[in-house]
Image (cartoon, rainbow, N blue to C red; front, side, top):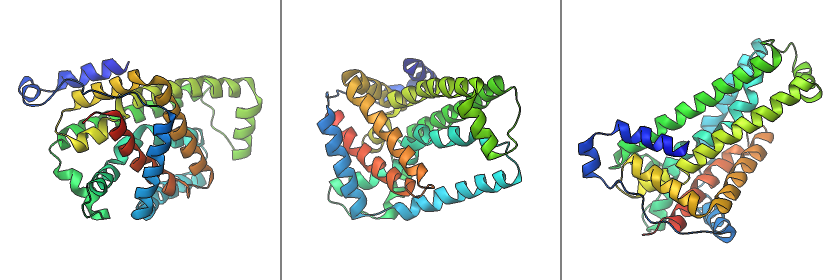
Length: 273
């Protein structure tokens, strides 16, 4: 499926553009759990040097407020609560492009401030960044649509009358268990595709002047080289996002920037100079 996305991207880029840019996947290294631990440590150091939690609070809490406001009107949006939260993992690599730039500048000993996160707008690869960003958003909306369709199929389209009643149906009835099992299984497939095509593609586009096809193919190569380690990275990301969400979204303001900075250092370990 990931290769199919690369083919779609390749089909949308003109022959002249491909001729001008490097389109072959770059060489990648095999990594292990120790590399993940080091990337997370360096990601935390970047965050500690220039905390960006206030920026994420400014994004997360308005979104949470909109959701809670809609919830106060009616519970028809409740079935989308988990898919919306889980979707952070699908759009996170794109949302963190400014953090990659901050980590890149700090690594090179350059002045690093929040305003430098906007330097990605002047990146030679900004067109490719937009292309992959649009692809990530399309996958996110496809996930939400799939999750809602699955709810309609298992619950017959009925909307919850109360939060307690909804939780009871999901946790104690056969169709609720079917929703949990099928939803998590399908969600895993969405997450696996996004991890495969995006694990290093956005940091690569920040760092080098390549196109979207080369970035995706390099990311696929990275996953093929270290499948177990990359699967562990995916579990770390999902686990951290769940913990951040369970703290009434406060933890996300810490988790998301740390993961963003760590992703840059993961890229530096994976893709050869």
